[in-house]
Length: 222
Ligand code: DC
Image 1 (cartoon, rainbow, N blue to C red):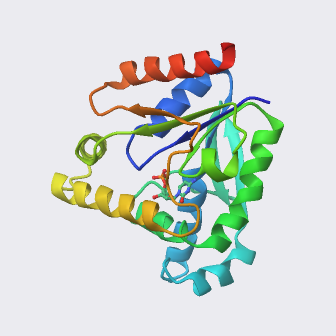
Image 2 (cartoon, rainbow, N blue to C red; image 1 turned 120 degrees about the vertical axis):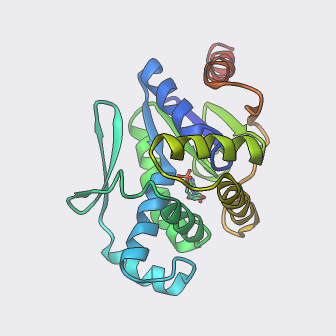
């Protein structure tokens, strides 16, 4: 099986790029952030503090998390409920970052992530795919961009959705999430030694896509 691991900070464009690449390559796109977001959502709904590891760990046995791929799109389910849209809020993103620092949550999701890469060719994005989840991935890309560039993209996405969060607030969130994701003890965000670094601060979507295709082609054909 071929696996492409794409890691990097929030807002670097991982999911949009990975989704498009997966469609073009005929691979399955696995968005591991959605798994952490679903656990974060579950904790919030249960009235628990996502930073409280003990409280979150007590919830894990009752969490029934499933995936389905409909027209190549990943859908996430909590029991029967499709939560794919509900997990896309800033609040749930922060909760995901908090539960991502919890080793029991990471262990809970690790098997599921590895199983998915065993069964099919995947493009998997996250924070620790190249370092922990798929250390033997065929291709590893570390996708990054400056906090300002990432906040500007996020802000634009919010505007398009009619969400009026001020840019300064989005930037502060980006920085806080970077800090949390890189400073945690459990599988912190960091570039794998054998990953190719791609900084998209100065690249638009099509340029970023072309750069990723080059990196992937060089590995697959080289
Ligand atoms: O990629 P995202 O913004 O949907 O991820 C939300 C949070 O989930 C992110 O801030 C950290 C956590 N996460 C993680 O710890 N490990 C992953 N492989 C993916 C996400």
